Image (cartoon, rainbow, N blue to C red; front, side, top):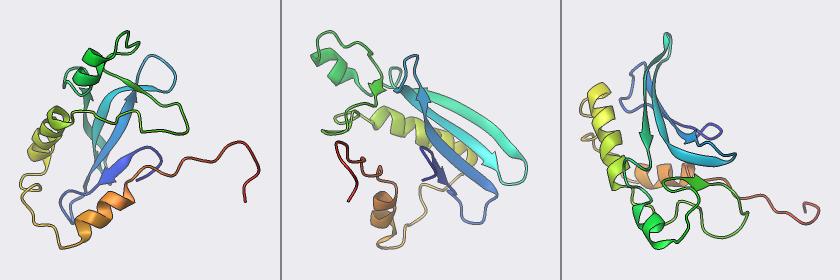
Length: 139
């Protein structure tokens, strides 16, 4: 995790990196998709694709059950407390698109076995940072 981006080396020893970050929406602190960018360590950017939440039906259930959703197919960063704004998202469409894109650039990366314990540590490592406290001096 670097700032708001996730950077991976899907094939160990490869000069190619995959950077994933949120694409900003039309309103401040709103996001409407993911940007996957392929980077070469020496040559820089090679390719990129934007995967929209709306086209991959990520928030279809939320948008259908929430009357008057102001930003369908998006999420907004906002409240300091409560569940994350993407809670309940259906990520199956996005995951399929990410797998398809990475398979084109990193053949076989998804089949590679993960050493025991590495996957659980990776999930912990990319968890969002703790939200800062508000309303008083830091202790």
